Image 1 (cartoon, rainbow, N blue to C red):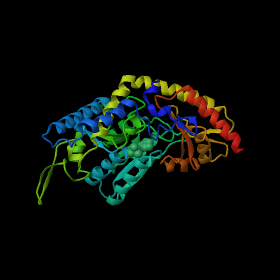
Image 2 (image 1 turned 90 degrees about the vertical axis):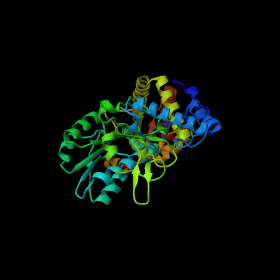
Image 3 (image 1 turned 120 degrees about the vertical axis):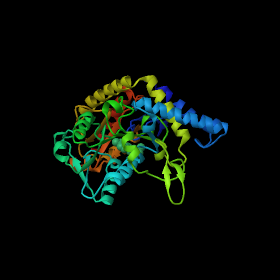
Image 4 (image 1 turned 180 degrees about the vertical axis):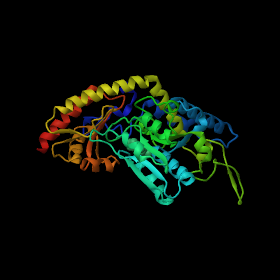
Length: 400
Ligand code: PLP
């Protein structure tokens, strides 16, 4: 599907055609996103929102059109609730820091799940330490599915927020976030959803979900690196303290007192990455031109096919066997260390990820050092899957 739109897929590694299966780490970029970046720097580079001159106005217009494209993409009610950041990590840090400094008091509680990426654990740990609050953990079962029944008992009147991944980057599990949000809201507890592994793989509607915050990175959805989004309900964002101080986020500054800008600018201190924002819009348009439903179905086919083929390999052990998964396959083969497997796959041109994938608690749960992870994007093919399987078999032979 649309492979020719991605120039990097014609590259070779060690003289072999590149089989890129590390899409959960970052996706490759279609030509129109690459072109949008050079076009921005060739034609309209200038600082936004503050300039009266022509280029500044064009750049501002393009920047705000991108915000509107993001709003539509996730069906946010208004662009005031769409804040640009550097990525999912910064989005979550923003919420943890600002929400924490506004609402967390000594003895309060924050709930995260056992399958979170470190970027949805550590920011909460930091703010909990600062505010003398407690971090509680919603566990998952051995298939890699959250034990939702435990949520009711974990939530107390001290719980201030639940932060959970839409899709796990290590297990591929699609979490029942609608249910999590429903339970949390029934106790008046807001929910942050880490959508880093979801936005490029399934339709996301923040109004239908009714989540309070939704965070994601552009680079995992065919957009440039260094750009991300924090969607937050205005009811929270209006009350929350700013994350960073600086230009753009203020209305008036005196040495005695500063008043803050309206949303979303209150949370966008300093010069943003304008070219990358424009690239993000192009990536969204690209995804929409293919169709998210189509992408989701196609990646499900790749997932089933590859899982079935890999399962025939002797000693194959899957880490993450949830009923609802995206195109992420984490596995181990016999006693082979994931790093050794990764290196041998690489030498055959197959790029996968090995290690703990920034989810050490998941590795602790399964008492393993890490996994080999293959993850799909819309440009992967059945041939890529066959190459992976072939390469794993070859590596296994070489190592035993
Ligand atoms: N959350 C999840 C589930 C992820 O997979 C990742 C990255 O792998 C992140 C957050 C952090 O994203 P970034 O490094 O783009 O900020």
